[in-house]
Length: 324
Image 1 (cartoon, rainbow, N blue to C red):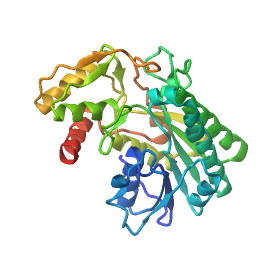
Image 2 (tube, rainbow, N blue to C red):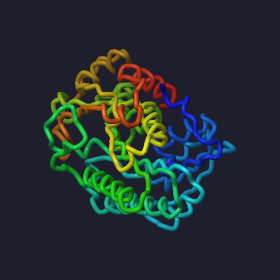
Image 3 (cartoon, helix red, strand yellow):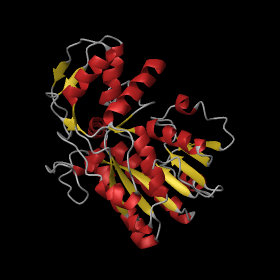
Image 4 (tube, rainbow, N blue to C red):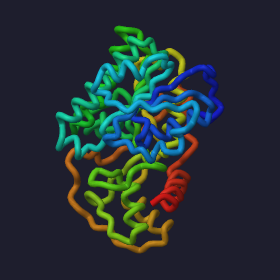
């Protein structure tokens, strides 16, 4: 069962932090389509006004423009909220290596502010975004919760700290928290621009423009690319999950494994291009192989991802062709 059949109390209000970002805006849109009230908190440091332009006038949508580094803003955003879906963060491993202090402020202090605001406002459940980067250099595949290695970047560290705070807020204060370790999410509205853009939208845009894409390393690194609809499902099912899930973290992926060079060749075929990529040195902090065991999420959350990589990439290409 997907998420569209899930039933919440009609009076429920969802707060989506980072709601104007890639993942957040898709969450806002999906929840509104289900008929529930959505409040979006975003400071637009990485989120975009155009991501929420189509829902801005929706009768059940409201926007708070503010920064999670400000506790007062977080307290205001959490007033009369039932579920917090905390997506606000700065992503990108390379940027975190350049700006560790900023990542500490936004990803750790900001998340702690949100947890505290949710606790004081007696929010029913706090579902937050973690990352596959917390597995660090642990060599085991597939990645399994409880088998984490040495962290390789400030970004990974911030997400690991978020998980520990999430656990503590449940165990010490009784705030129901669930962490979702996202594996390479992709789909509509993911930004293809800039030095820190994710690889899939960057490939697609570059090929559509008949330019030469760059590949870090030899292209033989593998990822568990996860279509955005699967992530929406995980967030909403986590909101309704049984209490056994509280204080826990879960891998959110499809459970597949795609090699970067194979994906590149596949995209060339789908887009009718014949362009040789340029290979450049590997990036520090990157994990070579990433593939998820999603059995824990299946068992505790009822997570059952519908979109495999092939279906997701076709939908993503369609969106970029219409919107670039």
